[in-house]
Image 1: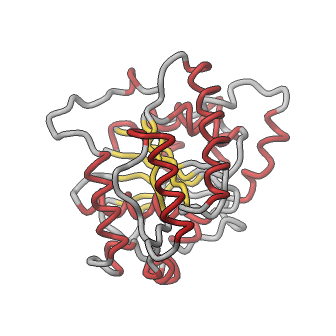
Image 2 (image 1 turned 120 degrees about the vertical axis):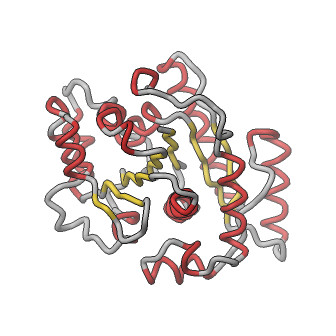
Image 3 (image 1 turned 90 degrees about the horizontal axis):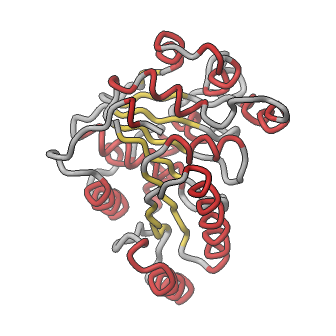
Length: 267
């Protein structure tokens, strides 16, 4: 299984849209995909018409039962969506209490990595949707993933958020004692505005090959797809935004001949 985390310490940059779009497109290729919602706001969970305020079982349960994680426990938390090949580990608002609970508690940083190891052979790809701040949840995502995807809105303030995210990444890499591959994905690009064009140019000048060669355009169809609770590729298959995410997926996915990772090599 491949594990990707979609993270940025700035909100409103397209994290959940990126997670859903990539997951839907990957599932459409026949892959078994698990979406994991690690945001207490539960935007990803709401996307699939579940209510984070009323869920009895969620990613929060993983932290509550971190000393008793098992195949059966994790499997029971996974929700099968109505879309073939696409499953969800939903969030509940209880996640918002984790920072307080983490004080003085052991083993809080590797909960998600250990949970994914329980279902490693059940999925080909897991995509983690992260909250927009550094804390226990983001630390878990960075510890569990093999690829970090950083959506960055093409506007000036988002550049500051990227710098904070890269600083966090450096700290995590020192802790992991190994490099974590990351890809900056320009989002909400509008070629008609000077601000968007200038920000994209700055991203490429400052971060070079770490920036995906393409960009995700502003596309109102994403909002419409979210309102309908439908993955973007099924809502408007030929939209500019979906085509951009399809290109991004092709860029990220390893070749079919690449060796598969095993639970032993998982973080």
